[in-house]
Length: 274
Ligand SMILES: *[C@@H]1O[C@H](CO)[C@@H](O)[C@H](O)[C@H]1NC(C)=O
Ligand SMILES: *[C@@H]1O[C@H](CO)[C@@H](O)[C@H](O)[C@H]1NC(C)=O
Ligand SMILES: *[C@@H]1O[C@H](CO)[C@@H](O)[C@H](O)[C@H]1NC(C)=O
Ligand SMILES: *[C@@H]1O[C@H](CO)[C@@H](O)[C@H](O)[C@H]1NC(C)=O
Ligand SMILES: *[C@@H]1O[C@H](CO)[C@@H](O)[C@H](O)[C@H]1NC(C)=O
Ligand SMILES: *[C@@H]1O[C@H](CO)[C@@H](O)[C@H](O)[C@H]1NC(C)=O
Image 1 (cartoon, protein in one colour):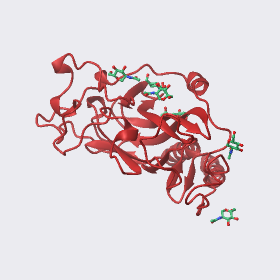
Image 2 (cartoon, helix red, strand yellow):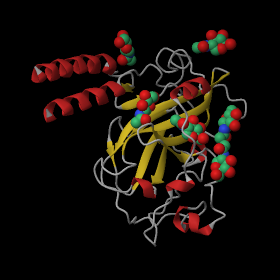
Image 3 (spheres, protein in one colour):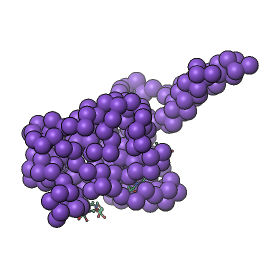
């Protein structure tokens, strides 16, 4: 019975990864951003989360900052961590340098995690810089976010831990037309997150309460997006031109492979059950 449960959980999980396009280990969002890390389904933990995003389309686009009237480029990006299982929607970066709510109340957040301060590891916590403008000169933006207090723990246990999406919202222009896409990258917050962080002198973590947003339904999420009909680099407006545009590498037919595998484990599960 335990084996069957494991199989069904695995099948459900792999099913949720279906449809994500991975080319040479890079995750293609429906917009212009390409995610280098983490891979979908990675168990996450430690002191902080790091999301590495290639904003140059793997060399196809120029570097930001862009002129106001840029023809093709990411205008801005916001990132959230949310879960319909835990009903949490936390800001990783709201795309401004305004920082966090609740900072008027000194007890609400710790110095190391405030804007224009830095953690003991030397970096500024996500949410204090526009993602497109950080690490100037680099095509890859490394968004580092100290895990807030409610995600502390080990394993899947604990009320707020478990499956999440890193939700990447992009405003961008493609061949002169504006778009807004939402891409959800599934991860598991199941590795150990120690209650005491090394990132602040006091060892205290930022508060989830100062990062929380209303959780919207899938329907309103879908309604707020305007997504190009074709992935820009894979047959869409950018695929024809620019440096490296024809580099399509070993695009894995992941969706189909996963589908076949899900079918296999369901049959295996049924065999065990009967
Ligand atoms: C992650 O997002 C997808 C939609 O993109 C949704 O179906 C799924 O339920 C979300 N996962 C969690 C844990 O909320
Ligand atoms: C992102 O860019 C769009 C289009 O220019 C703009 O409407 C929106 O306010 C910007 N968002 C942020 C967070 O800067
Ligand atoms: C970003 O967060 C700051 C601080 O909470 C807030 O003042 C600002 O309005 C937010 N901006 C957007 C575009 O959500
Ligand atoms: C999470 O909150 C942000 C800020 O309010 C919002 O833009 C985003 O759509 C929300 N995501 C979900 C899944 O509700
Ligand atoms: C880009 O826009 C121009 C002018 O609207 C159009 O002629 C061209 O076909 C577009 N290119 C692509 C790849 O969509
Ligand atoms: C890209 O993929 C197509 C179809 O699979 C193939 O015909 C073409 O040779 C590939 N191009 C490169 C540069 O690998």
